[in-house]
Image: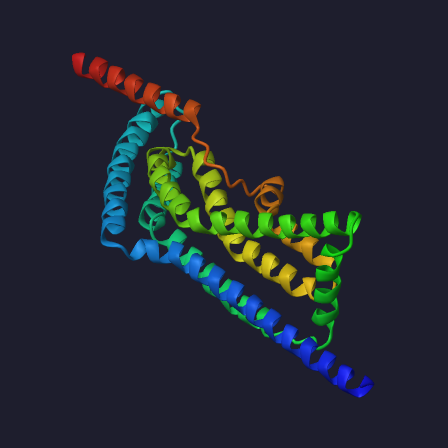
Length: 286
C-alpha cells in the first residue's frame, strides 16, 4: 500500500505541475495577445486617418513656427542679438521631429511588445518543477479546511494575485489608446521646436520611452512572479505586486508616464505670435 500511495502521489504531483505550467503558458499567451491588441490598434483605417490628421496639423504648426522663428530672429538681429545659425539648427530638429513623431513611437512600441512576448515565451518554458506544486496545492487547499489564520492567509493570497493580474490586464488593455493620445498631443509641440523651445517635446519623448519600457517590463515581471509562485509563494506574490509599481518606479527615475501639457509654454507661444503681428504691423506702417 505504501508503494501504491507513493506512486499515486508522484503522478498527482506531476499532473499538478503540468496543469500549472499550462496555466502559466495561458497567462503568458493571454497577456501577449492583449499587448498585441494595443499594437494592432494602429493598423485600423480610422486610427490611421486620425494620425494622418494630426500629422498634417503638426506640419502646419511647424511651418507657422518657422515663420515666427525667422521673424523673431530678424527682430533680434536689429538689436545685434539674432543668430540665424541656431534658427537653422532648430528648424532641422523640428523637421526630424515632425517627420517621425507618428512613426517612431509605434515602431518602438511594437518592438518592445515583440521582445516582451519572446521573453515571456522563454520564461513560461522554464516552469518544469516536478513534485513542488503538488505539495503547495495540498498545503493551500488544506488550509481552507483548517480554522484560524490559515484560511485568512489563503484568502489574502488569492486576493493579492487577482489584484495584480487585473491591474496589469487593464493597464495593457489601455496602453495602445494612451500612445495614440500621446502622439496627438505631441503634434502641439511642433510649433515650439523650430523656435528653440524643446523642453516640452523632450518631456514628451520621455513619456513615450516610459510607455514602451512599461509595456516591455510590466507583463514580464508578472509572469516571472507566477513562475516563482511555484517554488516560493511569498516571493512570487511580491514579484506580481511589484509589476503594478513599474510605472511609479519609472516616474521616479525621470520617465514620467502621465500626460502633462505645459500651459505656460502655450501662453508664451500665443503671446509671441501676437507680438510678432504687432511688430510686422509697425514695420508695414513705416
